[in-house]
Amino acid sequence: LFNHLSVGAVLLCINFFVHRLFSWAAYEPLQQAIQSLPYLAELFVAVLVADLVQYAAHRAYHEVPFLWRIHAVHHSTRTLDWLAGSRLHIVELLITR
Image (cartoon, rainbow, N blue to C red; front, side, top):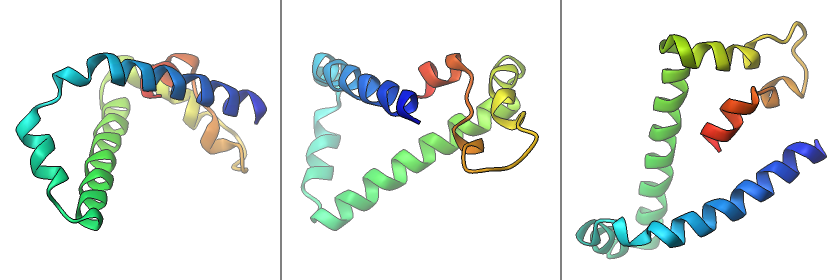
């Protein structure tokens, strides 16, 4: 559990700096349109987009043979317990997070 949290924290920091580095690439009119929404609508759009992207990525892991070989580690547990959802191949962890 600690290793999972440690990797997550490191990747969160890396993501923060990468986002800062490439924030110029964001489409300004889209940013302004979203920022003009009320806070709850803005939150809804953010959650919806994040959920759709996560769904598309997970679907790709099941549909693309190369990605399935990596993702199959997640489905390889013999007993379903509280750690089964955190079971990932290291490559999937790097790609997804």
